[in-house]
Length: 257
Image (cartoon, rainbow, N blue to C red):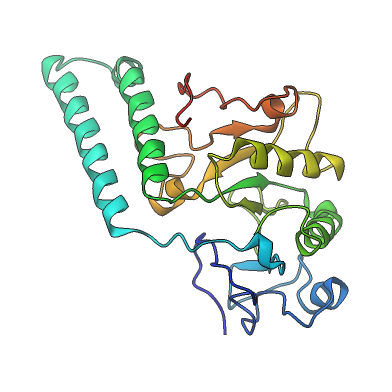
């Protein structure tokens, strides 16, 4: 049995919710047995993600399903932005596309802020740190992450893509989940743990980015039509400071208290 090819996070319970699903670590498997059964660089035709879930009850993750209310309200936000864009284009018929994009920068910042606030209000606050290891480093990185998830040192779950990335076939995507992106201390804690395993740089160089699941549910990828940045944290900022900072995306103030 396998899961759909999407980025939805699994729910949690006292027993891992996907025990019995072949693309998840089983409750009675050791990490070594799991990695032998599902090597990260293996070839899999039936599923796109390989998962590992935190077995500790204290690390349960509430299910953040695609809330119909969240989705409908988010679509209203997108509609308002599109309406604003049309107004700019209609009032400037000869305007260049790049000029339109620049003029709408404040509107995009407001749109992103509004989506994040809506996600918090509706409890859709799970998210993930995204790692892109090279193929030759994938087994080491994935093994370290699997051990850390099982030992309750990271978050509720992690997953790895079973295929190379578009345009970067020599890399795999690993997602390390946290329960609540508004819990900045926990987001930073997980980043610190990844850095301690040499999976995230501490020196402010090219680091890891954090994407809320709310953006995934709305199909907002890096090349989305709204030109929104889809990350809200960067390890380059978080690991340099005692307090986490939002990734530079126009969100200049705290979105939660």
